Amino acid sequence: MAAEARQQPERATPENWMYPPADGWTYDQVKELDLPCDWELLGGKIVVRGAPKWWHNLVRDELYFRLRSVRPEGYMINCEQTIMYNENNVPKPDIVVFDKRGLDVATADCIPAGNVVLAIEVVSPGSCTEDRFFKPGMYAQAGIGHYWRVERGEGDVPEVHECWRHKEAGFYIPSPECPVHIDTLKTDVPFPVEIDLRSLIEV
Picture 1 (tube, helix red, strand yellow):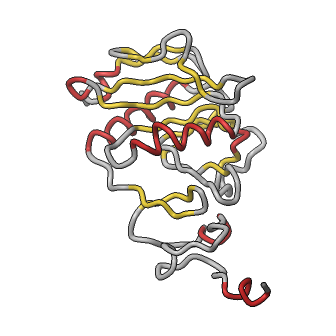
Picture 2 (tube, rainbow, N blue to C red):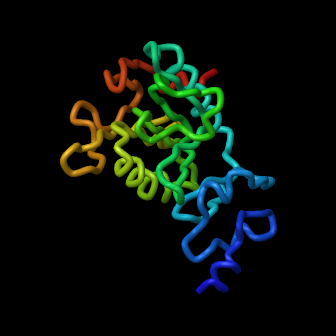
C-alpha cells in the first residue's frame, strides 16, 4: 500500500493531467496546471472546455454586463470564476453571482459555494451534457439557490431556463413564476432583473 501511495502523482502536469490518480485529482494538485486550453475539475478529472463560438461569448458577455449594472450592494458578478464545491469538483460557470461580504475577493482562487446565489451556464454543443445535467446537480447539492441555463433559441435569440433549488428535495425545479424566459427575461430572484433577450445579440 505504501509503495502504491508513493507512485501516485503529486500534482498534475502537462504530461500527466489526462491520467488522474485512483481517487481523482484534487484542486491542490491541479491549481497550478498550465494548459493551452480552458478546463475545469469535475469528478476528479480535468475536463477540457471546448472553444466557444461567437454566440456563446456574445451572450455570456452581454448578460454579464446587464446583470452587473443592476446588482445590489454586496454582490459581485464574474465570468469564468471557479466555485469550490469540494476538493475533486471545482466547476467554472459561465457567469457566477455571489455575496462578496466576508470574502477577500482580491486573493480568493475560488468562490466558496456557500456564497454563490446564482450560477449561469450558456449552453454550447460541446457542453450540453454538463450544462443540462451534471453541473446543475452539483450546484444544487452545493446549496446554490438559483441556476439559469441559457439555450440558443429561434433566430439565435437566447432562451433562459430559470430554476430554483427545492429546499426539501435538494434539486432544481423550474421556476414557478416563469420556467422559460422567451423574448424577455424578467425575474425578482436573486434580485430584480428585466432584460430584452434579443438585445443580447443585437449589439
